[in-house]
Length: 217
Image (cartoon, rainbow, N blue to C red):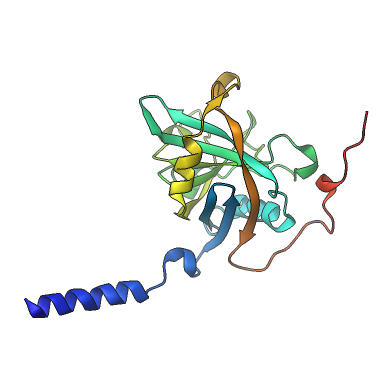
């Protein structure tokens, strides 16, 4: 019995000494911390399987384009309110937008819309994603590619902060139209900053035009 207890203590000590995924580099992945008014979410972006989508997201990160934006949508599944996805990013703010990124579909990348996956939002054109993204709470296979439907570009997963994702998903919502009816968060959650945990920042601009005062009409 004493031997078993000692062995268990050794295993516990070993596990405690090992750094968690969010605290160390992951081969082929780029870690990013999304700091919100509800807490932080750390994601690992799959630069190997979804290189174009990851590069696009990192460009927004490196430029600081996400700072001061919001999580504005909570899409809850009927009958399972703890499942669905949250959506955030630059919204329709043109001054923060970079060019659209070509779709990297799930049937090519192999990254499915499972629990904790991060995915790019887009318009009707499959190649129209820019600076808006979603994080899954529970699986959303309807967003995967299938015959006649290119789906959405999943490109990473949450390492820590799913409690924050679930808190945002539970926020009261209303408004919206079409597929977004009733899903617009009444008090959007502020994205304070988004920062790299790996690699070196490569900004695409030397100043931030979206921070300039808007012209009065």
